[in-house]
Length: 209
Image: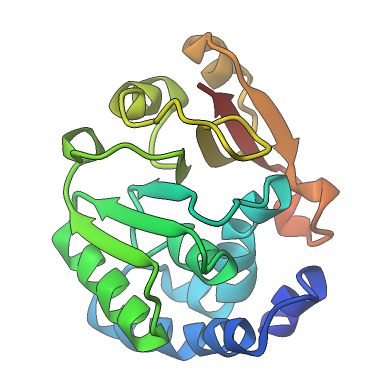
């Protein structure tokens, strides 16, 4: 399964609007990727598994409450931010990347989808002026420097079931990286939620603030 049915399999309660938006992603990314390469050529064929479903792993860890504000750092072509913005239409997402052409793709895709809850900014995370309930990201760098970039960007006002913090999509053996970081964290195995082989070593690292 490398198409939309992979998403509806794990998230059966989507609205018609959400299904339509997820359904548009393949063609939108195929088009924009041919202009500005944001996803590897090979991965375009596996977009629903390796990018969209992977991004939605965060939605298996926590359900953001309406009004939650989330920043996606180093979003690249919009992952995990765009799938999460579709999944949580009552939350606000701010996607940042230091590479301007990637933010152009994010802007074009989100406009084509009609996402009203997403803003995009060509900026480094540490220079973003606001703060957020959660920081999400996907394997941008090691956790210790990443924590340094965003530690001042998390608000202390708590209203979600999960305490505010970082939700970081990572893969492989994280032992050394987590030792280097040295702070509090919790690991969630995506293999507990998704049966595809791709997710065997994939995790969400949660860092509470």
